[in-house]
Image 1 (cartoon, rainbow, N blue to C red):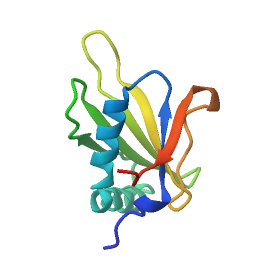
Image 2: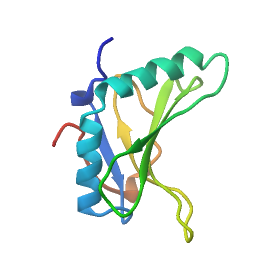
Image 3: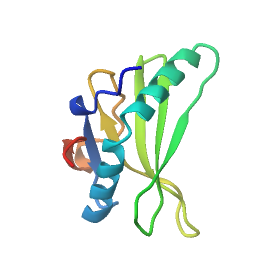
Image 4: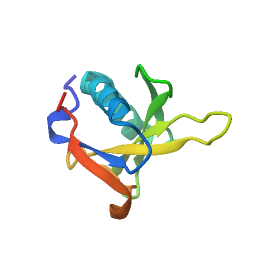
Length: 125
């Protein structure tokens, strides 16, 4: 199995949701997940015609807050959604903090231009 093309992707961060320390920890974690990401891509597209599905990874980030990566295939857009989410707490609901953006495989864009903090290569760590 080939690995997910991390070198062709970027992370788009939402403004005012994560610290620099959290973003760096998430980047480090994602940079080591090429095989897992490819397995999720293959799984979601293979089953998308039968049933809507999603693969969710807990990110092993050493931070006070827990983060996940959710991957699903949108058969209408023929693209993947790859959302990085801050997990809910007693006082807040789950919140999208970023997304993986790629051209191959094509990803769906969720974050609006005015809500973007920055975009950086996924393999920058």
